Amino acid sequence: MANKRGAMSIEMIIVIILALITLVVVAAAFTGGMKQLIDKISGVTSAIPEADRLAAKVSCEQYCSAGAKDIYCNPSFTGTLATTKCPAIAPCANISC
Image 1 (cartoon, rainbow, N blue to C red):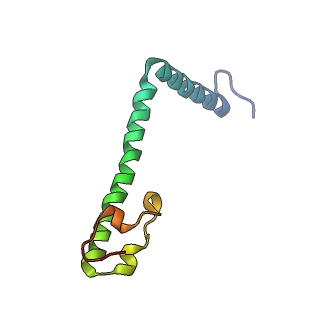
Image 2: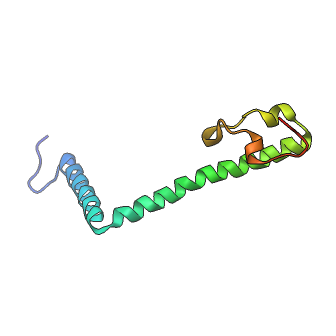
């Protein structure tokens, strides 16, 4: 299909959009804006392990109060705490591993 005079093709619009995005990223990199963006992203991802640790601590305290030695003494977590045992997260006076 032939383009009418003055009409833009979809490919040209996509190229213009990509060029504008590239220009914004380059401008942000030179003005220090990328550092702020990276710091914001890092702040969000660093909060995830802390949330995992808090959830694991609650679970370990529940295992301790229930006297569930098998579950308390063995690692049973996923994600960032996959090899962590409960005694390292929430010490329990009632159970010795």
